[in-house]
Amino acid sequence: MTIQQILKHHGYNCSRVVLPSGRLEFHTSQSGAASVGFPMPTHTFHGGDEPVEASGNDPWWLEAGALDWDRAHMTRYFPGFVEISGSADLAPAWFGRIETRVGKFEIAVIHRFNRSLPKVVPIKPKKRIRRRGRRLIDAPHMYTNGHLCVAATDDWDPARDSVATVVAWAAHWHAFYVEWLFTGVWPSEGYVAEAA
Image (cartoon, rainbow, N blue to C red; front, top):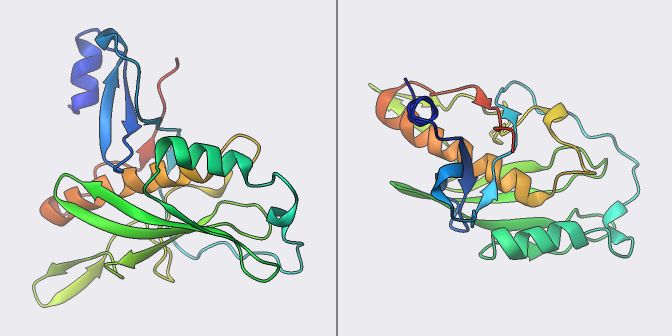
C-alpha cells in the first residue's frame, strides 16, 4: 500500500505538489493550509524514441506575449530556474535544479518549434544511470537519446500547461529515479491527479 493510499483510507484527499525547490510533497485537503507548491498534473511515464519535431515551423515564442504564461508560472512556482531567451533559430529554455531528499539534479526544459511537449535534458549529472555489478543500466522512462520522458505527448496541452508543468513532471520523475537507485524498482508508471 502506498502512502497516498494509506492517507486516502484514513479520509485524507491527498494530492502531490512540487515545492519551489523541486521537491515532491503530499498535500492533504484536511490540512486546511493552502498549497504552496505546483499541483501535480496527471501524466504517464514511458520511453523509447523521442518524438521527432516537425521542421519548418515558425518560432511562435517571438510573438508578443507568447511566453507570458510560462514566465508567470515559473516565477511563481520555480523561481530558481533561469530563462534563456529564444531566437529565430533557438528555442527558449529554462535551466534549474530539482532537489530530492537525497540528491540534486540539474535539468534544462526546452520548448519545441511545434509547441509539443518540451524536451527535458539532464545537465548534471549528464546521465541517469544505476550500477548493477560491473554494468551501468539506464534509468527506465528515458528516451533513447538520453532525454527524460516525463510524460506522454498527449498529456501535454499547450493551451493549459506551461513549462512549470514540465518541471513538476521532472520533479516527480526524479523522486522515482532516486527510489529506483536504491531499490531497483520504478514505483509507478505515472500519476493521476485527484479531483479538486
